[in-house]
Image 1 (tube, rainbow, N blue to C red):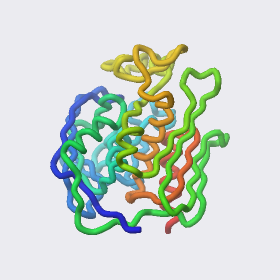
Image 2: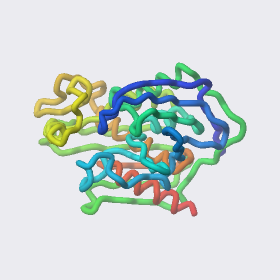
Image 3: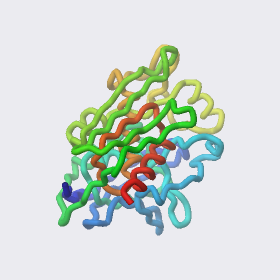
Amino acid sequence: MALPRRTLQSPARLSGVALFSAAPCNITLNPAPAASGIRFRLDDDEVLAHIASLSTDPIHPAFASMAPRCSCLRTPTSQIGTVEHVLSALTGLGVTDALIELTAPEVPILDGSALPFVRAILKRGIQTLAGTLDPIAPARPIRVESDDASAFIEIEPSDAPHFSYELDFGAQSPIPPGAAHWRADPDDYAKNIAPARTFCLDSEAQGMRRLGLFRRLSTRDMLVFGSEGPINNTLRFPDEPARHKLLDLIGDLSLVGRPICARVRAVRSGHALNHAAARALLESTR
């Protein structure tokens, strides 16, 4: 079923500090014409939010030998980092066309969730554009998995979209297990998915600090788990980590360039598997 194309009614502006580069950044989400898609602009560079534009360069030298900790897009002269939260917000609200202008090469982390983007978009309003957009649907079941198969994503044909994420790091982990679901309803996304914040273990945060990261952020700004739970912070939902992983999944899979009509089940996946799933979904429709 063809879906309406939608964009913002007027520009939405936010400011903050980037998570990995610590650079201050102003970000403006602008209305865009129908069929332009979601695009990012930095100075004179512009790039379409698509898996074909994904950058494999580490956003920080510390990540040269690690799996991706965020999603980055390659521009003609550089890259734009940590795009997943704003992409998730746009997708969650059904926005198909927008121009995102930045003053630095990494989207500001804000409170670590998609909620500030959602609030800014809703405050400015959403308008329907001319034309429609056909969703992308898998021609066959798809599965991508980690080397040991402990993490995987399954995508199956379905008459309606359904995204789910299952998180469980084991009984010894202070990060609570959980399962989160979304059926492409904008109100549900704004209320139950967008507020979920990015998170990490205290040991990970300390390690990142030793590498020069997170200098301008504290445990009050970030959701950091110690042995007894969040440090200097409170969970917004009992299963907030699972909901944030679903938020990331929605943003990363939006890189296929169209709304997805499928049943998507992710178990313990991260950005690398999300990217692999996006590529596999596109390949299955060719």
